[in-house]
Image (tube, rainbow, N blue to C red):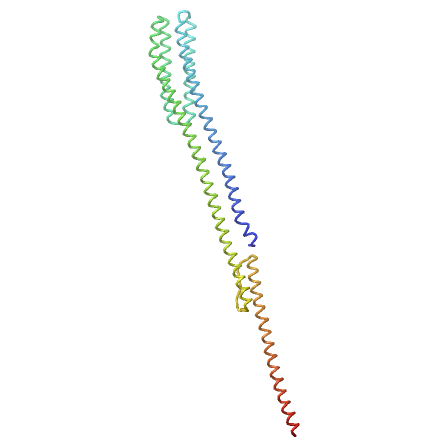
Length: 293
């Protein structure tokens, strides 16, 4: 790989990890927000259901007392209609409570709803009996509402317990959502930290390799400048520094070969000079001998 690409790898890896972590955080945060929103919507629906049940129960209680108050002015058909309306109102309350117990999926809420259902049935029976007794004597019917009032108090406590449990579930969901967001932030932050550390380690290792290869080339140049042509230079790197090192090695090899050629030529010249000197001495000797003769 070329040196330019190697230098680009650490910032590219860091940028890719940062973008990937950002995208992953966005996706997971969006999913967590959607789940939290759905949980909040379910909690609001539960609160609305319990509030509506409490309102309807209060309305039933008020209707019963109004019926007992005006009992003397009602005929049999109106009394029958009032009792029928009472049964329908209590049945509607029971249906809403059953839906609440099955919608949330919490065992405690289901148990509380199951405990409230017999109380509603008992309250309906007691109110209906009070209305029935009021047809004979209003005072007796009003006395019969005492037990119904006790049951109404138990129903109010049961509904209050359901509200408290629903609020606890809401708080638990909120805390869990906050914990998940914190864990997600910590996890992605740790991942980015590890990726940054890996990129820095890779950059440091590559920097050491580059500096080492450059130092090797510098040492080779200094050795050549001192006339040490026996130095060897080779590299397995497939980048510009490897090319430079191999080029320097070929340059040193070429200098060695050139020096060897010059040395051979110098030896030849020395041999020829020696032969010429010998020939000159012979010629001088013969010339002297000829002159003597």
